[in-house]
Length: 331
Image 1: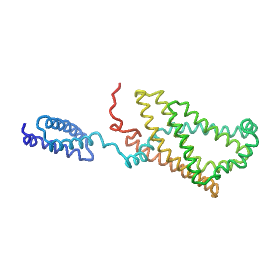
Image 2 (image 1 turned 60 degrees about the horizontal axis):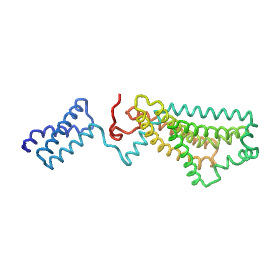
Image 3 (image 1 turned 135 degrees about the vertical axis):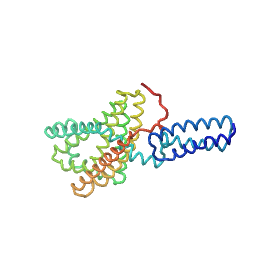
Image 4 (image 1 turned 180 degrees about the vertical axis):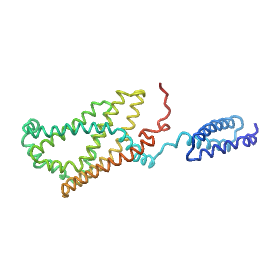
């Protein structure tokens, strides 16, 4: 086979494939044409490599096919700062937005149980003495609860709070596959809030309790509730995988849990800064709570706006097809 004749015969097809591969948008007919030309040019490359080896033409056709493949199946996986930007603006908010029912259910159950404990301990303060001695209750009410937020330098306290909350949330996320582990973390958090709040409210120090817990607590608890919700959803993917094989459903849920863990680390960093610098500050109570409300509203707005936009664009928060690799079709 003569190389020059071969080039002259197929140059038009190569040029047309190059044109389609460089376009940002293709209609249905053009997409079909791109696929057909891609297969044809792949055959041309095979013929060149096997019958008339030519380095220049092989390089040219290989590059053309690479561009066409990117146009056909999508762009290559993002890396570095692009991956971080996608995680912040697409993946994390999409996952949280799509699982809002899980988060709302967890929040409703936990807050409801805590409020029930507050009301019950307020009516039965003697029950607290079965858990804590009277001296410890008085120490907590008069000194320890308020001093907790100002006993250490703000910078080190913020780091300590962030690490502690991040560990708790990570446990809630990654123990989700056991279900029981996440429920234990949630129960422990609920009892702590219910017990301390019940003691403070029962001692008529509710203004101190809410004035110190709300500025950072709204965002912090939201992060914990989201972590528990995603953890329980991961366990549910193992229990009831739906149409997917159990291993594949668990892999999808696990990858999404990893994305959420990184996102919540940032959220908890913000709540830790508020807890260290705003909660113990000399600002009026209404101002401190107002800062907490603004932080909570900012997070919810971020999730709704970016999450809804991503869902409408077809994002799931999981890896793309190329990033996941090949999968065996199942019925």
